[in-house]
Figure 1: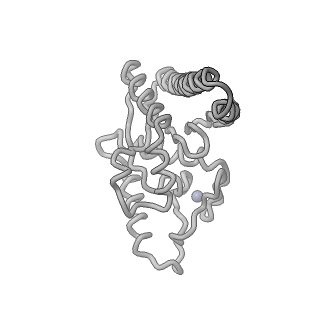
Figure 2: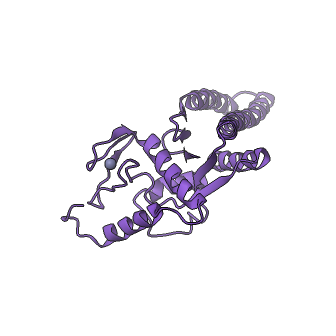
Figure 3: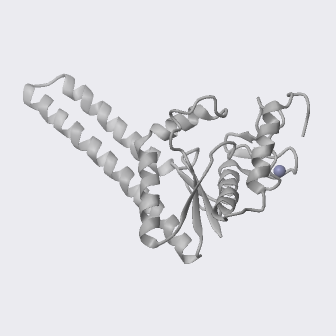
Length: 226
Ligand SMILES: [Zn+2]
């Protein structure tokens, strides 16, 4: 059994079992800090010399607090995912994003991926997951990230027009089998499927058919439909 985890797209993390952590609480805390920072910066630009210094010190303490909060959130999420995997005797599958910055000419969502690959909070969450999985003896599988967000996990179809996608923001609607639902849940399920195949020495050919489908898609004219 494999639990697929889609990280940092719209939700912070979304598992193939449907568990998700959204960024709402995190955003509220960030907004709170950014308001405080703005007020302090205004204060720091005027006032006496000593009050300006006090404001600068406070600003520094704030950025440390914000970081620690983010770290705490990442600890909590990774702990929950790894304990669930251990309890259900499952492996965890994540997208392999190493070298994402170097890779060019990838898929349409490369801009999002660059942001995700460059964010320290996102990087930290991956590190925590890898570390906690190793400590707990849970195996962790990395899968190729190409098309995980655009493939339907039910029928493995991708939109025949490369310029379009079945995914639109938070929702996914397959034009082939009609599956409709949360886009991150779909992504997590594709990751789980790929993880299950990668985990076996010789898979049932799911991965190959996906690759084949992508290859066909790349050569297909936009007018021809699947
Ligand atoms: Zn489908």
